[in-house]
Length: 262
Image 1: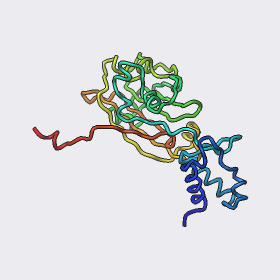
Image 2: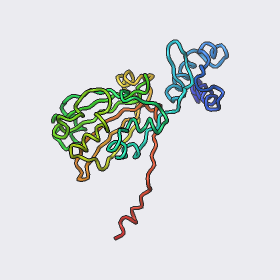
Image 3: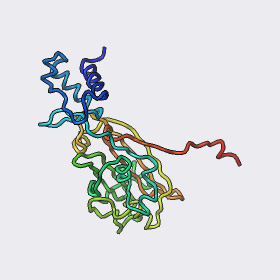
Image 4: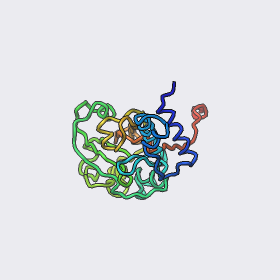
């Protein structure tokens, strides 16, 4: 049987989606739903937590549970890496997402820490290095207003980035055009990428950093960036709050049979 909290969550979700509960509107207090016979305090609390995890509401002390004002950010696929954005302009990837979503942004929405660290196994494998070799880790936390949206840590070989803006810990992108422009200017023009995604429950540390409810899910991204001659110049791991993004891809459908025709 469907748990009582799930039935209540589905009922409230239907009212939110129909517009009965409008964006910015506070949902009834837990005690009011209990008194209305919708379930016990623990049942209503679990239903509200489910709605929060699904991205339909936000909860905070002093404000109660409120229907989300904004749709999730559009996280672009191929288009966010358009060379014209960062090579010829200053629209780095997270800014491209904000522009596509019609949302405001500041360069300072991205903070970062840069350190030289022993390469974890997955990073060493991506770069073709022995495990434990030193790499630069550029760890970013990206926010929209006061709310974190995701983290992204890029790993580079020291010989590719030593002395460049990539290893400067100043908040914001690494100068005009960001990290990809730095690599381009250093002679490492990016040519193609591989992105792998998986969803999982956030760790306690991630939940704290991203301001997530316990048990909320994240999308983990692994991005490998290559030059035209297959040199890996960046390997990045991102952790995205699942309910704060919609992932958008627009691409030409391949036809490998035609491509193979001599």
